[in-house]
Image (cartoon, rainbow, N blue to C red):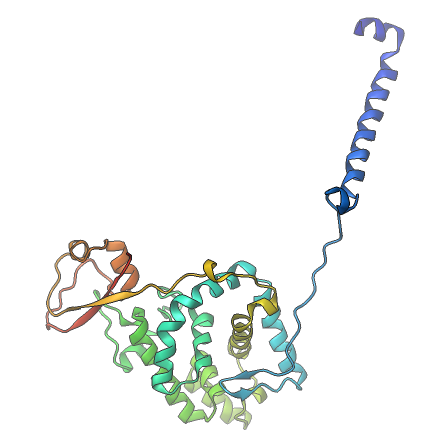
Length: 310
């Protein structure tokens, strides 16, 4: 049959008809997508992105952010847009907050530090107790080894208390209080936590000004306060910034029991099993244990957390 069509030249017309028929089918399919919802058909619409709006006023640790200054307003806007549209990361922060905020909030309150400082942990480590920076600042609050030792944290091959959430939070509070006494505002104390007390002091002397919003500081430090403020705004009212995370989708706070260790532990794997958990959970809830054993030559008292999983 095909040979006959070819011999008569008809095959060209047949192919043309087939092509036209396919085009008609495609057009028909596309037109069906544009029909209305009354027939339960898909409506194609133009996708648009709109910026989230800045609030009229913002405070950090009870101190007003001067949004009437154009550069302050634009700096906050930059961080708010960045975090509001970094969906996967910000959703994770919203989910993690119920697990870790109940641990650090009472410590901040006990030490006389404004509650807003809990958002520094989000900015510093993303609420990751095991976080390590390129400069080897580690833990929830990204504390450098020298600073940790200055404030009494233990660091050796088997233990690094920068990974201990409660102990590192207490050290963080002491550092912030020292900076607050030095600079006079919580905003400057937070900036100094990022930029370093000495560097901030040099800029104050150089620029003859002491208000954070008047100072020219390193880019990272300039953005730091605004990022914390943006994270505070979003985590306090996530729905306002288009995040719909249900309570049952958030990571729950996991209760633990405390067990004291006064001597050596030759095998933490075996110790974990004796406590009714596995080695993974022992390290997850006690990341300050850096080895698979605890020599404890000085017979110090350590307290480990054992998760209650039932």
